[in-house]
Length: 560
Ligand code: ADP
Ligand code: MG
Image (cartoon, rainbow, N blue to C red; front, side, top):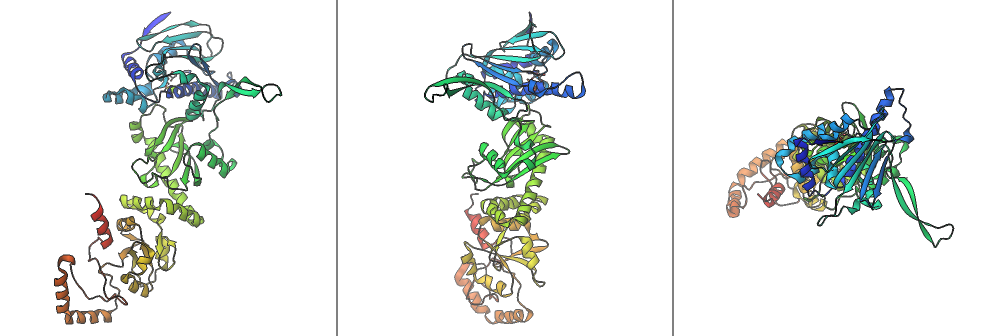
């Protein structure tokens, strides 16, 4: 038997791990299963190029065994195994990808953070174990080895007569500590749910003995325990399946399965990209606004998988804020499992995926708008505000990506219209896109300022949402047509004759107007004669500038 020391770096990580109070200790199982799956993959890839190796799918599986008497948990695989050198290289030091992230993170000096930030691989088993034994035999080798460690100073290696190629990892669960019990990891139900949660889409079967109560013989009264080996994971992820094979019901079931919402999804997209970056994705647009959507505790994000293994439940970097309502999953074979949140943000692949997703969601919405107007309006009723906030918060080219997704109520059409539709209806002499602010359509219709614009035969967009005018101000124009508030001072709709007449009247009533202004004092900036009024004696109007009366009201309400 040989006794070896861990490297200093490994020791440090192990120590942090053991003392961590990180709550999701269950991820150790995800890590071990992912390693087992990688090991089977390695045989699979070898078989592709080496005729002497056959790959019969039925011979490859992962098996989980819990032993309550010994308090051990075994993860068995029929993968490629390890030679003695590989055992020392791979389990004696932190895996390369992990150590890189480790070095970056170690500055934080915070043990519990570390494990939350990335998968730390094999070593994570020491969160729940005080001893780990590995029995392994490499493909093409006739000797097996036993590796064992308590996860503190070092490990031992000795020869071991293992019959089959593959690896068995035995986890000796720690004695229960204060407030912490590891016994759950021996329960069928708990193990099943952890496997389902993290490893459902591993390509190879994850098998486990499951005890079920069945009626004894034909009597339906007496029950007996029947132990049966079952495959726990579903293996083929829905996103890897062919779109043609899937029905709406399948997508709905997945949505519910994943608890993306209690509603039915309004619409879904199934994306498969095989270019600069490879990924598959299923995205949903919910039907209903989540109850906490506009509050601080709403978190946007998509589930992120690396080749079938869940690495993050809510990856925010994959979604722009204006599409934060989108739910779903992304799986990419180009991402490493041991990737930290910080690294994810700067990761080139993640950026490419995010860009692609943004484009696909936009195209999806545009096509829904074109082909299923009712559905789009339903979407817009729930999430239209978010699109408007998007326009308001974006600069440069970004806001242009969203402008065709906007809908506003139109005075002439008496329904929601797009800006494009408005502009297409504009008559030749009309220069601006007119809008009016108000609490409701009713209120806006009663505004004195709308009369003259309507008389001219011009369409008016009704803004009833506070964000409407702010968003439009960011756009400045659509298709070269400037937006104009019907209440702004410089509508300039009068013909020459009316203008001359107005000048004359202004001169005539100069004294009266001045007197009115004096009486009103600093409540108003100016009192003018208006040519815009027909059946109303007076109206309020904002002078020049960019801020309308309504916007001013909102700005005043906002905390500094
Ligand atoms: P990573 O999986 O990111 O490489 P791990 O710490 O999870 O990091 O694993 C370290 C290495 O140990 C793996 O890269 C692999 O070479 C080896 N290994 C771990 N588990 C197994 C296994 N079940 N079968 C074969 N090799 C394994
Ligand atoms: Mg691993």
